[in-house]
Image (tube, rainbow, N blue to C red; front, top):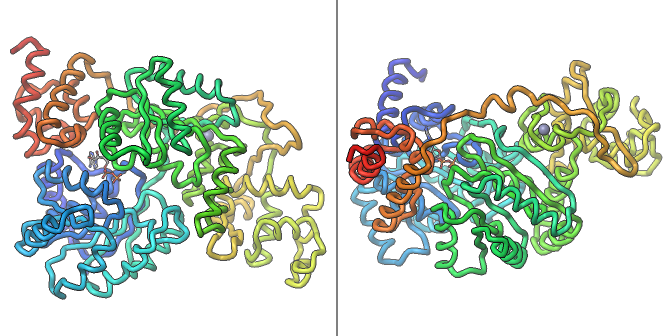
Length: 617
Ligand code: ADP
Ligand code: ZN
């Protein structure tokens, strides 16, 4: 059934009105409306968008625009509560069912559900699996949203077995659309999501994962005092804003925090060893801007909607690129320049290795750690490494990472790349890295001969280079997105679409020269690519005095209502308010992030502060 322009236009008008009314946003971000309209037409969708990209609206609006209740499956009970509270604060009837609530509370929710009072129900996967059996075939469910959908894939970094049973949704309700959402997924995970959820001809939406405003830097084994000095200089540089330092262990986080507080900085720790009350307190102080920096283990930062985090430091090597990029992505959500700094040492690798050995998923986790380590040691643009990792094609250096700003000596690697690609093509892409190098170097080992790989034309074509050299160059080809590793096919190497262009001779390849001993002797600086600076939007800074008064008002309201300040208004909304200084309620409603309910509730409080500042009170 083709979609008529008329239908589309009227849906667009209706959706925009709801977006303004409940969320106070004027327009959709790229792809949001497309996704909404597909879901509304009953299509299954897979949505890949980076953290902060605006995924929630893509299932919340269809829920609001249709009859019935949307079921949102989410693995993180701690976050569920925040999401539900935030929805209610916007005037949207939402509720949750999970083991963290009392039986009485859960019963009340089911009651509300039966009476059709709830538009969005958040539920844990375990709970859904038991609950769904009690629902009738004609239960008024408008859609199912599967949040953090990468948890379904054993190739992902956060596999959760209970997710693998969610195919029951499609079996039970074949005609209700399912929308799966995640902020981290490579091609493999993405395919796995559609397959395991048994989605029917799903529409795929992939936003760019590029965050050009975040600069990337890695410092290898700096030693403790230099490390602390570098962190201090970041805090000084952004004294009015805040940052996160991720540490591998609680002890590490505590030591660092003590170091920083001793130096007079406002710092706190956040890790799983704290009581829930202590954790809430630290998180709150961070959100309220009372802290400059938080020293945290990985447990920190999920679901925090704080847009002015200016830097994220990794005090140790993270365990995989997915987690790393998710954590980095918490910086600079407002689009203004932000920094990601990572320290790394061999001790980190040893520590991470021991986690892997206990994980029960050794092989895949070891692969992921290897890729992380390669990122740390990258000699090509780090952003290209990251984007290639998520199967996003990149054809230029970013100009905003340490490798781009201080590049190693380059050689023309086109022929090297073509030799490797040609060998891969001739053996039907049926070899891993070691076998490929052996073919290129003309090894006579038994397995190679048995497979007949010695009979291809490129056999021995790379004899002039050592094993170590090939290994370094292949790793660069991987990082540049010219080849990829298929974890689900015995780690065989495959040629990407970009690699095909290289093989066809249409695209030259620059590689960092391989050194036996000391790398890093650089002379030239590359000009940043225009796109590295293009997307940094410049906005005038709001008057600091008014902004802090508005923040005080926000804190007071949050205390009275018992919700987090960012659920009252985000930092961005307050900054806009301080800049625009609305003098009537209509202008107040015009600010991004202010919908009808919040305008009605809060206008009086904020307008008083604005009038006072303008001297019109
Ligand atoms: P994700 O779930 O992808 O991490 P969210 O859905 O939480 O992201 O959205 C991140 C932020 O972006 C929120 O503060 C949200 O209010 C804001 N946002 C989402 N869509 C829009 C929009 N169309 N216009 C303005 N802000 C938006
Ligand atoms: Zn770069």
